[in-house]
Image 1 (cartoon, rainbow, N blue to C red):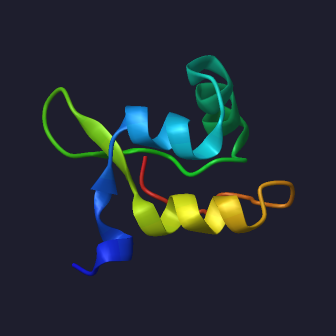
Image 2: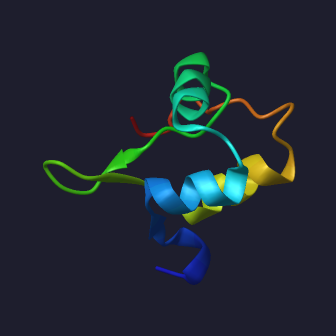
Amino acid sequence: MNSSDRIIRMKTVLARTGLSRSTLYRKIADGTFPAQIKISVHGAGWRESAINHWLADPVTYRASVGDPK
């Protein structure tokens, strides 16, 4: 796994995007933000590469059909 494919947690995603927690979940539901991936029974995170992709163009980002949920 290269450094851009590491898993980052909610706190880091919120800090990097400037989004609130509720806005982030709303964007996931709308398909305008990458979905989380499950990393344990009670834990989830995001691929850093997916967050970087969103940060590059947040206005036109659309989640792919194959994005993990």
